[in-house]
Image (cartoon, rainbow, N blue to C red; front, side, top):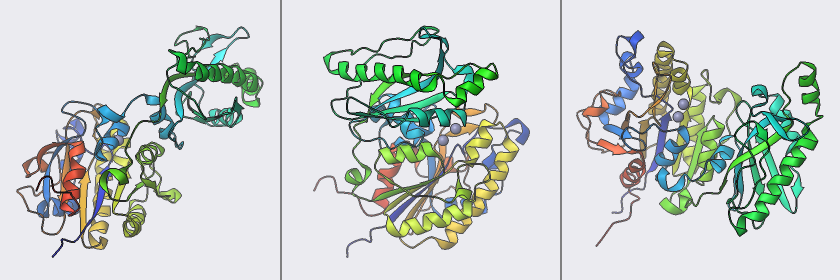
Length: 412
Ligand code: ZN
Ligand code: ZN
């Protein structure tokens, strides 16, 4: 009798892992908060600890999700440009060359006087990005989208593009740098960038946003300075690599961007499921359950615990953990049969440090007939008692594909 092919769900609770917190008497938010539903899965499943990238390496959410999707980040994470663009929600395509940019201030002699234009931010940068996005230079389409604060992402789309060029950003005050090809192949792309930088000044110098800033005595964001050119990474699409269809349910543009680069379908979410602290987790879980009807693999990301960690609010993180557990209870009640379900985090976000740390994250895998182990509690200490031991982030997917009865036999 052939084994039933199961579906796979990753519930990624962003930044969930922590260290002992002062205000919690040395406990982590997971240890300090009752989590009967997560504990049920730990008790009935297999658990362990996971170094998302490698022991002691502090992952970003981008490299972490690459690893969770079964890719070695050291192989595929080449140049930040394409990931930055994907991170602000742009669709990056093969052949595109992507850059990180600053909105900066120059005087009439193209001398940079403020690399961050007084740390301008949205909605002003949204307006300015719109004004310079969509132009064509020598057949190359130029797309711009604002990022956080004074940052933006820039995509060049067209033929014969090459990322081997120098930055137009001088990385200091002084004259705007002229981009040049590092070799013959890069010359065309460098010429496009130099022309774009010139035009960005022409378009933005008297833009209403800047007229208003001039009036208020603020540095004008009158030029875009690209740096860090990178081409679309050579990533084997998720479905080709694993012979399963995949989708992503996340309320954060960066996670959607990374999953999109890997070839997962991005599922739209109602506004109340956005990646903020008050997100409606139950509604998001319902979207996930619906998505599982269509796809073999679904990655769900819930951003809320990471936000509390960055804000240094351990007690708020405990409250988030409580709500996560209710959501897990909802999944437990409504999940389909023949499912491999995984509960984990993409990294630890220490509430005392206020940032990601390199500590391993807890992981629990549950499916019918999985071998139970000694772990009975889903936490940093509880999962350490489990049979999975200590694995790397990119080991998780192959383990689950095998539990789903979808792996290829190696040998006879
Ligand atoms: Zn994260
Ligand atoms: Zn974070």
